[in-house]
Image 1 (cartoon, rainbow, N blue to C red):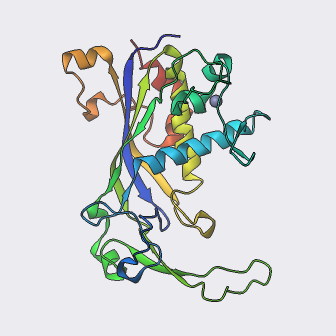
Image 2 (tube, rainbow, N blue to C red; image 1 turned 30 degrees about the vertical axis):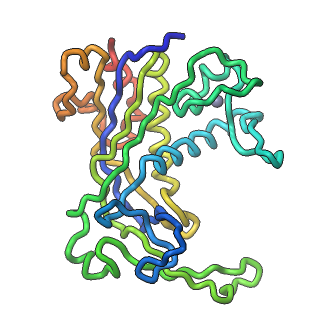
Image 3 (cartoon, rainbow, N blue to C red; image 1 turned 45 degrees about the horizontal axis):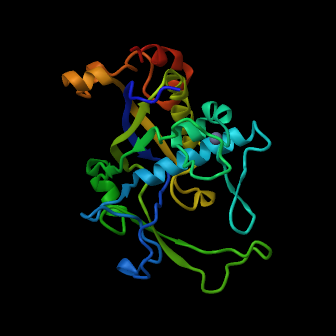
Length: 275
Ligand SMILES: [Zn+2]
């Protein structure tokens, strides 16, 4: 398998918060503003979405989807002999596995018979709040400058009653907030990577019907991706400086701007990833 840069697919878009979202901040034991659980914020105190959170969530969604097709998919055990994840063991598996191809694997283990280079192909940037999305009307109803505070109680599942002393104050980003200039970069190292790009958009679709951040079982963290623009920068584009991410260069102009629209007509996108 070749292993050199053919080009980069750059995916940009907007993340819209549909139900209050909580991506946890550092748990220093310090209660900021008296909150029990605070959201992660940038140095200016505004909530943001760490690239690592989004990247990890997308991986776990694709893992679960792939696991449904392969009975022996979960093959990594932790030191207590509990199943803890997935890792391809052979070149044959690796070349056809979206999880290991896109997210990469460390092949230091003696038991792995992989000869191919196995770099991470996906990079996800941190995504910052679009302050304009927090309207004055929203601000009037928020407890904090950009976020709301909810009280949540832990429920005893057997009795259905609140656990004693379990009332917690939870900070979350309000519904209606938008995060702008989300950016995912997908490196194309061989021809088959062009086909595997589809999994990124499938993962975004799955995420729209799952949740980002914590407390999804309580309805938190529903998000939508929109205004997606996809760019194809070949290696040669970098050599000539023709890499600007301007709308007229987007390759999805006639295809659609949401994950589902892009998945439906993915062949049209793939055909534009020409050498
Ligand atoms: Zn794999």
